[in-house]
Image (cartoon, rainbow, N blue to C red; front, side, top):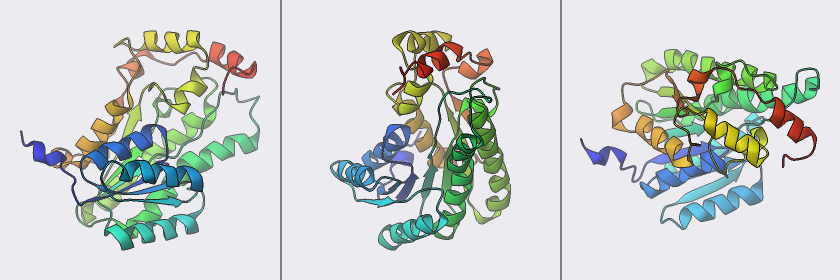
Length: 272
């Protein structure tokens, strides 16, 4: 097999929600492979720090503050990235929000906030980046969640939003395929050292229980996700589009998760 497929030298990779966690890990992986990065995040300080860390790896990086809920900010950000680095070869859309709450404990505004970030934000990122995607040849990667297809108590907002993200992925694969644009969803399992896992497993006990629930008996690593992203973006993934791919150690095979204990711990203030 040709390992040069994972050489992204000179290619432009844009990452929305890329200042920390899984998304920043994906940005780092592409930076190591030679890509030039445009990183978007709500916090100006965090996105500037992320760009500095990426440039320390020997690549070029542009950090731009932009909220995925604000189309005008995204439009400006993608235009600025394209002006500096050229058409976008890889777009990663990973902005997300989450917390544990039953439907009755959740206000309509709290539900709307997560849907606005996860679903509307995913649409905004794809829609506003489209003008700057390389045609043909661009790859769009959505970061989804297992709640998209596993009904999960205390996660009504995320289940609804991420199910929408995966369906959006499939619709855009149909609409944009003729332009030579591929789009897929990666579905991470419980990934260690991420804010998302800390919210869903806020204590050592709930974290250990989560790991034991995974058929592979371990938590995932950020590089597990970044490697899948690079494969999808490479020539090895050139005939893959509209796919929803779990990278979860088999967790999706085990059925709905019980977050009752974690939700109780979160209410007691154990969650960050």
